Figure 1 (cartoon, rainbow, N blue to C red):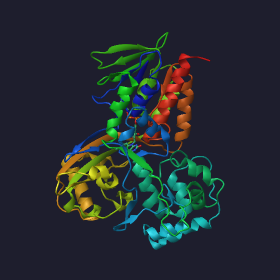
Figure 2 (cartoon, rainbow, N blue to C red):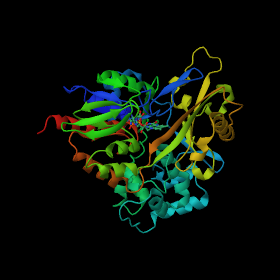
Figure 3 (cartoon, helix red, strand yellow):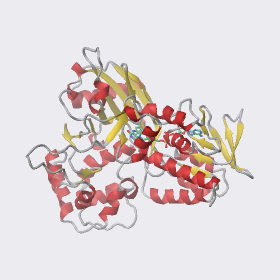
Figure 4 (cartoon, rainbow, N blue to C red):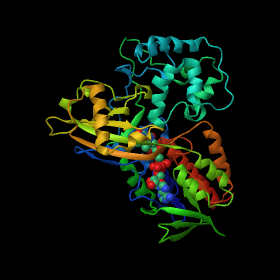
Length: 474
Ligand SMILES: Cc1cc2nc3c(=O)[nH]c(=O)nc-3n(C[C@H](O)[C@H](O)[C@H](O)COP(=O)(O)OP(=O)(O)OC[C@H]3O[C@@H](n4cnc5c(N)ncnc54)[C@H](O)[C@@H]3O)c2cc1C
């Protein structure tokens, strides 16, 4: 069988299928495995250039890491306390919120993120009559109706932007904030709906000491999540081919035929089963050639992607006062602030193992700046030198970073993140129905049920189950 796409979803699918009697071949179009997972050195420190943090709450990521022998490499963050650049200063993220939707309006007030007028409007959520919702709506429409536009602009939009590089006036309430959309039904107030999803703050112990700290939300690998693809590939025992772009998929009498490589020099492969572990557009192109799959192809082609760049900067610690003595992993910058950088991660604060640099008198601070949201592609047309200068200028203003960075890396992610726009869940249902009618075919990856790594691995597991069922019909 053949898996098309050597990102984490495709490699995980290969791993889940490792004990099947049929040989598994992974075909990856680019010269490198891993898709959005890759690490390289900046100022001698190995840091992720794509995904860098893994949600621990969902088990699929950490389970796979342990299963492929990297469990000992898992490390925890020094802090996940984060901030928002708003109205000229970095404020702490309000303490109890669900993707920026506050469960605690007093905590929101104390954070200082909103103006007094914005806060007064947000408090109206507690008194307003229920907000009617007939089907899916943009996040901004529903959350804005409850709390007003300032809370959307300064909290919800930047938090969603951090995950999807998307905009809350287009992203789907049901697909991106599913649990909150479900909880909104029975609750008149959206703050109360958010509170029903967030565990109460830990009670102080009877002896008056500090409450027990909450378990860390994220984890990573000491060498970066970029180490994961090779480990999964090795454990999967599959045949792995890079520079093997699949150009066409066709049904044959007994299975599938894949056309691989350039149009001038094509190679044809036969497979009894195929998993498409691809972004939506290439998956749509391949499905276009499959009779009966046109509805899936059309639904996939309708999924837009946002492009972005990660600009990783290195500063001698003495020139980067923002990280000293601070317990903040970074901050988000709302689009309404009109800055180039939309998110900043103080990597050497968030991940203390990166800060341990024995032998360096003035250790290096690594700062990861994220640039680009959907609809803001023009900024990404600047060359690397310009992007570094833009990021360094924003950092100088927001954090007091002194002088130019001593090293920099620009990683461009063209079409990096799928947009779960209004109606996404219906599109995914259409795709699943059409694929279910194709024996020996499955799809997985970030386009469907969550862009985070654990969610992608979850789709890979379901794709592998489907292929296994195909080989052993009931
Ligand atoms: C900058 C950035 C930061 C992120 N940060 C985080 C984070 O911190 N935590 C987190 O959980 N998630 C994060 N994500 C999201 C997450 O990394 C991705 O959603 C996930 O890795 C996608 O995996 P995938 O296998 O579905 O797709 P991809 O990684 O896109 O892999 C698909 C592969 O298919 C290949 N391909 C495409 N077309 C063809 C073809 N025709 N033939 C053969 N191969 C083909 C591509 O080259 C690619 O390697 C981030 C994403 C980005 C872009």
